[in-house]
Structure formats: structure tokens, C-alpha cells
Image (cartoon, rainbow, N blue to C red; front, top):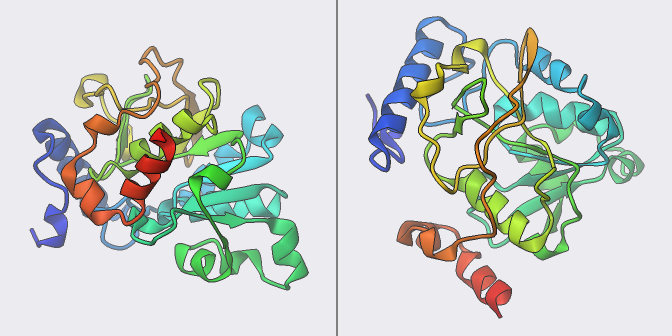
Length: 253
């Protein structure tokens, strides 16, 4: 195992073991596209899973879509833009002085920018509008990246905590309401047994899961976390995310 494969390991042993198992299965079965380790893994059939997601009533009615920046969900971002939806997508690993990019399909068309040029994070960074959390509109559907999920709504990402941090801030600002669907797209290999995932108090559960060949409504019984608990953040998050300390000061007055 390389150093890259060890990123974010050690914060939760059970989650670490699950992620390693799923990444290994994706690699061994050649279901992964590229190196899956320490990522929200891209996979064969990602476009089909995105197409499944578009069948949801919540998707069809959505005007504002928040979507993670990973390559596995690039087709989700593309389909949203093609269907006239505005997209918020975060800077990968939140390493810039601003957290999000805004993609408005009407503006992109006016500027002659092909949507395929912004479906991946590199293009989104080049052509997207930089926005702070406080400037974001209320989202109609929230797409998160996952390494593993359960049919009852359990989920785990790659271990860095970016998605739950973002959603905590969204909830505190009123951008993400308790009734807003939280959804993901994954390979079938990533759907694991119920007892495989430990859900912690800050972990937001899933309402829907799309795979290349099915839609799963979770009817989740997991509680939705409340407003942002700043005391639960790790020291390294404040060190590695440039805007986080300043954002905390602004939000807490």
C-alpha cells in the first residue's frame, strides 16, 4: 500500500477497514476507473448511475443542485447543467480561500462554454463563479460522494470529513433544510451490509442511492444532524482549510 492509500487513515478503525475492503474490491474486479484508493472512487457505469438519479421526482423538480467535485459524480454535474439546473460544487478538499464554485447553465451557454468542459473539477475551477457559503442559495437536492453505503441510508466517505463539514455549515446557515434529499451515486460493490457502517452523530444519512441499474430509497431512520458543532472539528481541519477559522468567526459573531 502506498502513502497515498493511507490518507486520512486512523480516525475510525472500522471505517478504515470498510473503505480498504471496498477500494480493494473495486480494484480487483476492475470496476474502478483509475486508482480508487483514498478517493471517492470513479467506476464503470457512473454515467448510468447518474441517469438513474435523474429519474427521481426530487431531481426533476430541483432548480439548485449541490454536488461533490469528484470524478465519480461528473456525470451528475453534467446532467444537471444539461437539464437547466444551477450547480454548486466545492473546491476539492477545500484548499482554496473560497469554498465553492457556482455553475449557471444559462451563463455558460452565453459565454459559449460547453458543459462538458466544466463537468470535472478542473473546468469548474476555470469557468465557475467563486462563492462563499453565505452567498449560496437554498439547495433543492444535495449530492454527496461515498465510498460505501447501506440500503438503510448509512454512508461513509473517504475519511476526511469534508461532506459532513459542508452539510453542517449548510444547516447552520439554513441552506440545507431537514427535508432536502441527500443522495449519492455508487457502484453496486459499494452497497454494503447494514452492520458494516458506523454512523456517528455528525454523519448525515442518505435518502436515495443510485447505482447503474437501480434506485434505492433508504427510508432512513438515522437522525439528521443539527446545526454545526464547531467544537467537534479537528485541529487539522482548521490548519488545512484556509477559510475555516474566519468563517467560524463570521458565523458566531
